[in-house]
Image (cartoon, rainbow, N blue to C red; front, side, top):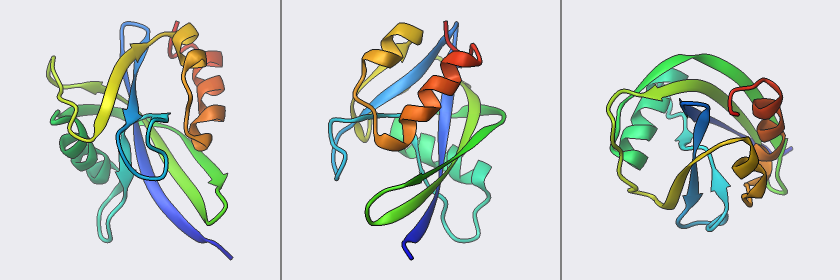
Length: 132
């Protein structure tokens, strides 16, 4: 049985777009994802999300609620990703861990090379009208 990795991701929404970030390092370098990361022991998912966004984007967010939970099997682990609808609490952010980022509308989401776990999430976001 593969280890389950519990993570959180932020769907940072603005004017019909969502913030997509390109990984700068690691096994999935160059792939696109929604910012976030691992939940540390003793941390609530919401606290983990706020911490990860501060670490990755040097920004604070307002969390509007849980959007969905994505379950995905990779070759060597199972991913459980809690996805939250969020907004930036300030107008700017900085790329600390990612090589690139963009505000993606529905068309742009389909043009990016996403990490596997985010592919089905992209379709749901488009169907639900979170992006236009």
